[in-house]
Amino acid sequence: MDFLRTLFADVDFGRLASQFAYHPKSPLIFNTGFFLLLFLGFLGVYQLLRNHHRARLLYVTAFSLFFYYKSSGLYFLLLVFSTVVEFNFACWIADSPSPARRKRLLTLSLLVNLGMLFFFKYTNFFLSGFQALTGQPVPVLRVLLPVGISFYTFQTLSYTLDVYRRQIKPLRNIWDFAFFVSFFPQLVAGPIVRASDFIPQIPKKPFISRADMGRAVLLIAAGLFKKAVISDYISLNYVERIFDMPTRYSGIENLLGVYGYALQIYCDFSGYSDIAIGIALLLGYKLPPNFLSPYQSTSITEFWRRWHISLSSWLRDYLYIPLGGNRKGVFRQYLNLFLTMLLGGLWHGASLTFVLWGALHGAALAVDKLFKQIFKPADNWLIKLLGWVITFHFVCFCWIFFRAGTFEVASQVIHQITHNLRPDLLPQVLASFRAVFTLVALGYLLHALPDGFTFRLEGFMGRRSVVTQAVVVTVIIWLVIQVKSAEIQPFIYFQF
Image (cartoon, rainbow, N blue to C red):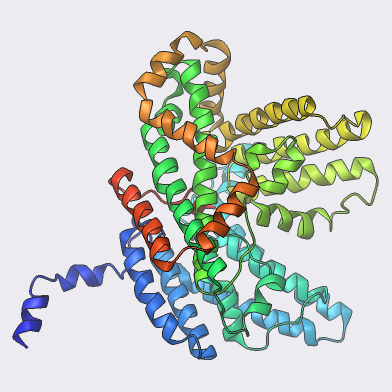
């Protein structure tokens, strides 16, 4: 008894308990020490429940709801509400013999889900637009945007739509459906998981091969490195300074800031996806890839096959194709592409800068298809190189509007680059921010590695011992601790 008193004498139980409460400024995210400790404890209990199917699913679902509570507070009840509503709508749709009734039920489902998303994400955006058009004063509502609402709304929508199309059968146990919707690795920032990919895995006993373990370790290590070592460092030490006050810096500094942000958002978002896919693998579940070296693309069409794959494929299957796709003539195809990307831009945020970002990509996709149909460019290295240069810089140009937040800031960045470039300052800028641009160069170099190298590295890690794999993760965590900022930086896509 005296030993226990001594052991726990210095433990601040009040502070420890506060870690489990919701704090708006410190959400539970993958690159925190608290999540690491919590996940290790979670994993220990999970291993004990591997052979107990129902208990394991309930345990993971409970942990997932706690994970979401730590990110959005009582808004986790919205996730519960969405789960209950979509579970019942899908069952009603599947059981209804009347096509008209099935359509009405689907319409109600869409109204509930999209209405919830519209209220929390777009109410003030459209109220402000109404005020700008009419001059009539409107109230501004204090609405907190629940983390990841766009992701899990799209996930439940696709499930109900697939049931309506009779592409899948609905789940008849609400706990299975709750497990699918709330699965914490991908809950708040994707990938957007399709029911047809994930639900068949639910009744199976999780199996983790040695290759899966190696791939999981590599993905988690790579994701942590991308996020905490590259993305956060270049953001805090360079990119934020540029976009906070573009006119204080020369054009070359602004241009490097744009290149830096292109790498930052890739490392941030793909880093989250890597960690999510890796954690899911450790639990015995396979999630689809979300990024495939997008900045290697030689056309904007290829870029959207490599960037945020789960969203682009969702927009294709549930928006572009229902609009008519390429089945109603060339003009309608281009219009459908434009509208799809326009709405994809609005999905990212309630701002005209996001709308313009989506419109630019939609127009570029249409132009790319038109160009290839008319000119049928040759497939040689020179054409590919030119296509890569154009694609990369077009994507970077669009990132200016995505990051700037306002058209004023975006125009300032563009003006500095086009009217005050000052390339003679490049050596001085690189010398002043040596650590930042060393990481930028390293990030782009790693991104340029061929896919085959990554697959070989995953295979190599899969053949290593558990001790070696643990050492790799430990080294990465040590690096994260050494370079991370004093305050944890949330993942960029949490706001969407």
